[in-house]
Amino acid sequence: MPINRYLWFVLIAIFVGLPIGNAADLVTSPPEPAGEEKGIWGAIAFSRADGRHGFFWGADKRKEAEDAALEHCGNAKGRACSVVKVFRNHRHWDDDDGTGFPYEHCAALSVGNVRAETPFWGAASATTRREAEQQAMSLCGGEGKQCKIREWVCT
Image 1 (spheres, helix red, strand yellow):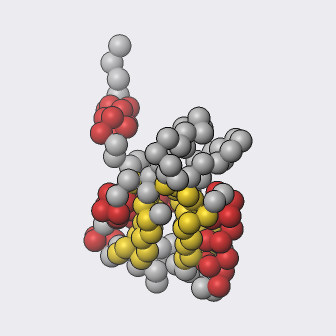
Image 2 (cartoon, rainbow, N blue to C red):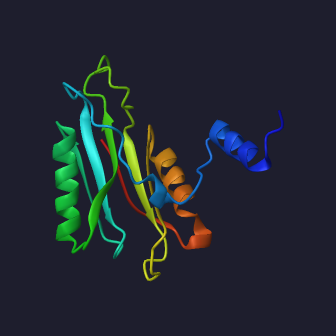
């Protein structure tokens, strides 16, 4: 049974790990863990309306990190802040709450031309700062979209 070219592209992109679409398509946060939340939490909030942002790290609970990042974004005069990335670090090496939520120690936010009507942006988390920054730049569109790392944080 023949498969059309677009489907091949999508399958290859998924296998290789290439992003498909704009970073704005990836706004949904991973599902909130049920039960005990192990680890040290961090979050990045971003306002697509004006390019303002806020972040927080070192929280004992996911919601605490999200709320603090939103507060910092609001304090930076962000008009429409939302949490765009949540991440956590191991508190103890044997941490495992069975949720499948990854332990990624670092996150980064990349923002392109903020004077554009809809600024390009990307937010990513990874096990190292460098990986998080590279993924955020890729999601934003890279230097061609005038993207720069606006913030990075590691727990």
